[in-house]
Image (tube, rainbow, N blue to C red; front, side, top):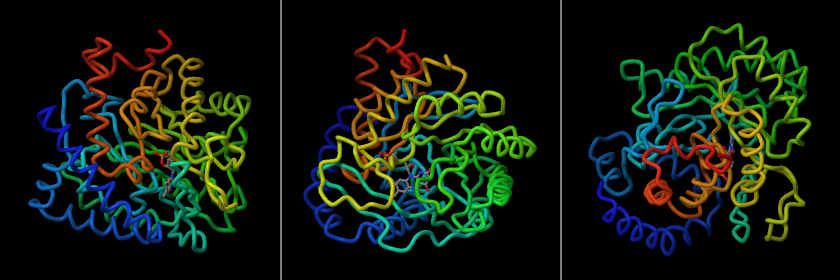
Amino acid sequence: MNHTFTYHRNRIVHVLYKHILKPIFFRCDPELIHERMTGVGAWLGRYSFSRSLTRGMFSYENPILEQKVLGLDFKNPIGLAAGFDKNAQLIDILPSVGFGFAEVGSITGEKCEGNPKPRLWRLPKSQSLVVYYGLMNDGCDAISQRLQVKLNGGKFSIPIGASVAMTNCKENLDVDNAVRDFAKAFRIMEPIGSYITVNISCPNAQGGQPFVAPDKLNYLFDVLDKIPTKKPVFIKLSPDLSHDELDAILAVSRSHRIQGIICTNLTKKRDNPKISDAGVPVKGGLSGKVVQSLADEMLGYIYKKEAGRFILIGCGGVFTAEDAYRKIRLGATLVELITGMIYEGPQVVSEINRGLVELLRKDGFTNISQAIGADFC
Ligand SMILES: Cc1cc2nc3c(=O)[nH]c(=O)nc-3n(C[C@H](O)[C@H](O)[C@H](O)COP(=O)(O)O)c2cc1C
């Protein structure tokens, strides 16, 4: 798709989103809009004409952005983070929106209703969301069946990661139960996902984040290691970890088959100077601009410390090509987002990819992989 055409097309879509759709959406309940948009996306993905139309409105491709990572082909580095497509209803439309990959879930061993409503809020001044869904999803059995029929020759048209987590229920306050539940979700999703992410950082489960403790994480990974897989395994971390906690998690991860790390999930901290809105709900984790610098700091820290041992996925506060490029230069091979798309509109995906091509060329790179960790060279 032509670079200049994409620029003008994206500007038009952005203006329409900012001045028409967003004011309407932002007047309605955020969870209701999330549900409705998932329904629209699922419908658009069902027919070839609507997929082609969506591709014409949103896609952008450039060979500079292509990479092979852990045996998977990525047309571009921008992925949909876990939590937007919780039940894997959107995978037919996401490639047409311009995503290079997507993560579905988080998916738990058992179907989970999540926390009571309300459980999603916008913080417009902070360009953030407060999320208290509590791992609402249809469970691994239903979601694996939904995805199974979409596998074409054993593959999806873009890599689809399966984010797995423990079911949010009181039984999982017991660590043995939580590990069994995690293992069930991992075992069921392993044949389906292009890669598997072990989400140990959900801020909204009744059991908290027990697997931040190194002995419990080691126990979890011992059990997961016994499930045969050739698929890449990632873990997703909280931005609220201290360096000591992070070092301990990295040490445990090194001794298991973890190949990648996603930095980061939502932050729970309320003393963040990036919060400009009053009356922030006490429950839930914060996304977007509020988590951006915490996630960037952790990304750079791990990249420097681990010197390429793990593939890093940068996530948190990506709204522009500059945000994505900063994460890549700090060590991210791939980048994920949700909140940027909600605040800026779905054209943000191709606009980030288009902008990345400009930034890479300006710095003399001929492929995106050359820019990974460039800040530390
Ligand atoms: C509505 C919503 C639901 C989320 N649910 C999950 C989830 O189920 N599992 C997960 O690992 N992360 C979840 N997250 C966290 C995101 O994947 C991501 O780590 C975080 O939002 C930071 O990225 P962003 O600033 O681009 O939104 C959720 C985020 C949002 C906004």
